[in-house]
Image 1: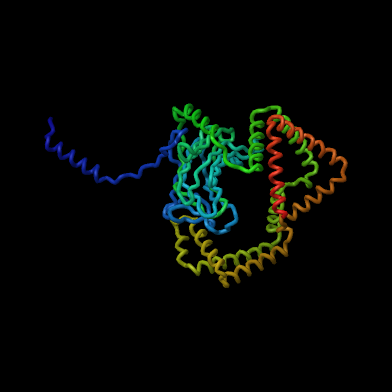
Image 2: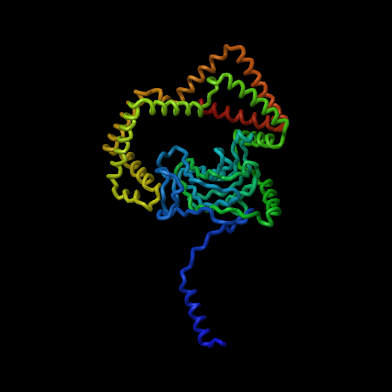
Length: 456
């Protein structure tokens, strides 16, 4: 049976109207500038809109949602601060973010890691950026700089950084001509730590995007050759003699570690002798980290076994809450930020900023509350001094133990063996890079000149 043409026209018209009237779905953003990887699934995104910012971020008053981005505030202005993402899991991936270097910030870093170790650091300075890999002693890897690129200083201007990872390769780029290409075995790991680090206040980040990479571009082999050639022919970043030596020495050690079995054998011998010495004289070589753990363990034991500790600690916590309650009373509208559906970071962030302003203004009531908290804390520490021993004090005790071994012939003999093994490593490094001696001498002369100038 043939359908009536007017009915067909009516159906077609209705379909067109429905198509026009249907609400448009938000498009999934995709990186248009990827040079190595093919973008796949969008794994994470955040534009730091206060209404939609992810609860997976963790930050307090040292960061705040401002002007559509995440700002490093003036709270704790002399300290390096990080904002990190909970439960990331990215392997072959593309990470993209906008950044603005403003205020005092001179060093902004994207830090990734896995298994308790960092595996890549994209470090942005005012005049250049670089890609570094850190130490992983468990895997026998030492730090390296994979590359660097001069960038035009653009204070208070937004830029977009894209970092692509595939296997053991990484490429970070701002534009077609501003890029760093690198390759290292530590890159080939699932990234389970993801953070942005700011050395000082002022900078902002925005529009963080993470895509899975579904493959490498077909032209990557050819593109890699072009990028590698351009990177090799670049003028280096301007550095003083001490920085030049430090960078050259670090990269030499990394290259020898990855490529030279004889060097690895020398290093392994030195480390084995040193580890045995440290094990037999443990109290003379206990590390800063180990001392901190000892003190924390001692504090936890006292807390669990002495009821008096818990009583006094509770008084400190109540006094601290009284400070927060007073700060909130000065701006009660902040209470709405504790409601369900509001990003969990916003209340402590904004409350901390109000507190910082009151403190800077010399608010007498807040000062009195802070003094009371400090009094109670001092009483707690006086009652249980062993739970609050400073690491510096513990280090002094360790150094005293180490000094006492100067009269121990067996220790001195073994220590000399370790030192000789270390010297063999150094000698090998200088043979592998004859120019290292000259760089080292220039570095020493430069540092000595600075000391001489400071003494005048």
